[in-house]
Image (cartoon, rainbow, N blue to C red; front, side):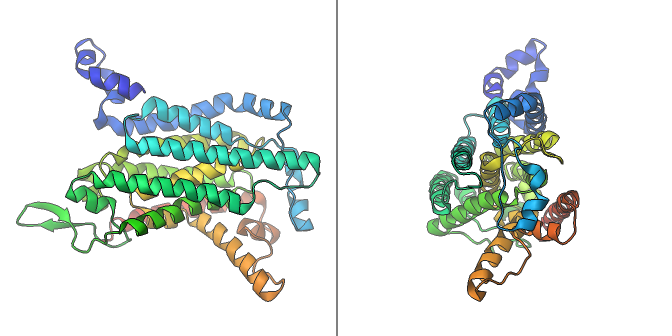
Length: 398
């Protein structure tokens, strides 16, 4: 909103001594708006956090975690009656920061807002149903069935995949090649043409047909959304990891949306995708702000209201910037958490009751093996930071 209000009047503002507003209204200063999104979203969560928690407590929106293992219930007994659905803080801060600082004429911003609101409402309904079920029958954790959640996640991902693909068709030939490319680590996106004296799309570029593009979009967005949801089980765990991932994708979005930087880093150039750096920056800032209240001992949990939209947005940004494989590296902990659940369930069914891990998702396995909750959380943060560094390093290994 601020960008759209200021951008048409830059010359007048400059001539009247208000040129400093160029930092918000000039597309060349998008890195400043991304930084402001981090600061604004952090500030909003911290300012409204305490009063939101009081409202949640007054409305008796409290968590009462129940696990199928008595030893896990004992470890998590201190989390009873902690307010949940704190994800409304995160979603609200991302929405406000994006509306104020992003270019609201951007197609990619429109789709990001759709993703945010759709999954926040889905998570909110799931949290609400769990709350109602627990009130009617103590110990009940029944919310939406998994197939119901997947139906809405897949539906959103199909819509996003089709719209992103159709939007890419409107680009020039180079833009279409980049928008539909399968960007693999160590594979060059650009080749230097000595005759042209510049870069051109690499001959080794893998172009995705429409169906494959939409299928990958569905897998990435739905998978990322559910992986973050599974990780949200310890104080500060999901929020801290997500903050690191969002910071990394803030940088990737800035690079992908600027042709000169994309060529320099040899990654796909996606016109106007740099506006997603505002969204990613808002995600990072809101998660850091949420840690103010979610660090051990947590005063509030994000619930599905926060974890589903955070994971979905991260997957969406990865799809637009063509960095799905870097998401697997940067979000390696999220992948590990999701895979541990799939393996545990599959092995349990095949062997008639045996388990690979003491408990899944895998953060509980380490907790039961003697790591304190804080050790699990901080060590998973550190691993994510290292994975982000590795992912960035692969950009130079092409």
